[in-house]
Length: 168
Image (cartoon, rainbow, N blue to C red; front, side, top):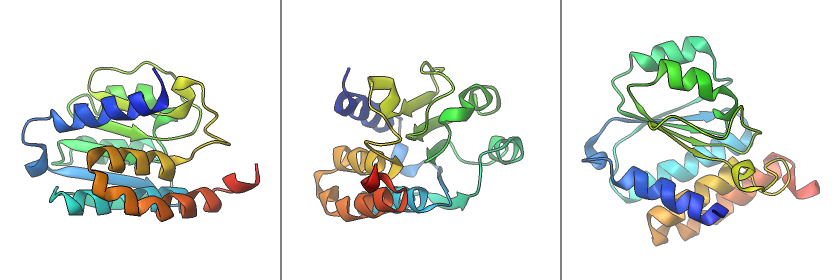
């Protein structure tokens, strides 16, 4: 499987969620530049497709936040620029939610439970610390969701520069 197939598969899984446009979707991004731009990309893509969502940015993904999310009314949760290092905890605490992780940090593990969809370049042999960040992953997800999202590429570039990926 290559990176683009990984993204295509994730978008297909998202679109096969029954009535996904009317579900409560929670978007949570990391508070750094890459996380904020990744969040902006997904927000813009969802707005374009009339997908309902609630968004926020957080400093870190921890047990306290996961406990709150477990009791949150959201059916679907997107983690942007974090989540790969917390897969086991996500599997335990958010087993009753559909979880999408769009992250470039080295993952705790590559295989996930059925309710978790994990897009991470490391899974397919791409170095996420140098070659693509969360905003780039979010861009490819958004582009696969709807071709009209190609205009969001500038946000992915801002995220890469903010994550100092242009100097590596």
